[in-house]
Image (cartoon, rainbow, N blue to C red; front, side, top):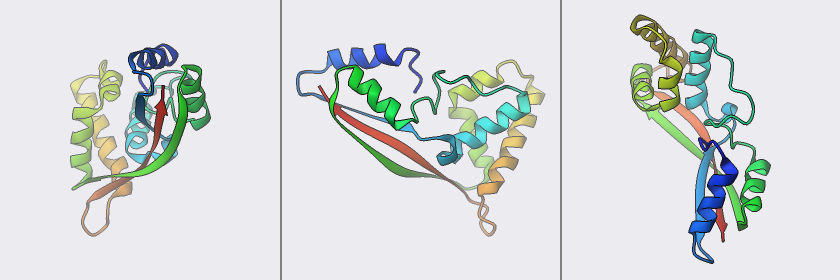
Amino acid sequence: MFLPDLKAGLSNVYRSLVEGGHFAAAVWALPAQDTLIATTMDTVMKETNVAPPPPGTPGPFSLSDENSLKNSFMMSGFKDLTIERMKVSFDFDSPDEFTTFTSETAGPLQKMLANQTEERKKEIFKAIVEAAKKYADNNTGQVRFKNEAILIVSKK
């Protein structure tokens, strides 16, 4: 997802494998199927007036097209490809807990906020809390994000 040159990266992996060796990877599906990342990224882009990255830019959703992903593996020499989708849920006790988790673990988020003042960052984090409330249970306040990963296994 974050490789600046996917072809070179996959070619390096392929060369590193022994004959008959396997390589497995997981990437995120489209933003509509990945509410955790999309909620954060959409909110931050809105709050900072930043446009989405152009197609082809490395990022969490850059490999979400199964056909393109499969072709990239095949062009690097991989064979016997298997692609499956898997549902993944992330649960948090509250929108605040989710926002804390995101602020501490999301590298791309840190890059997007690098030029913001501390006060502005607090405002943006409040906006993320508000956006996360959409996924909160009305009774418990717990937040559940339903996501989908694309799993690919291939062979040299």
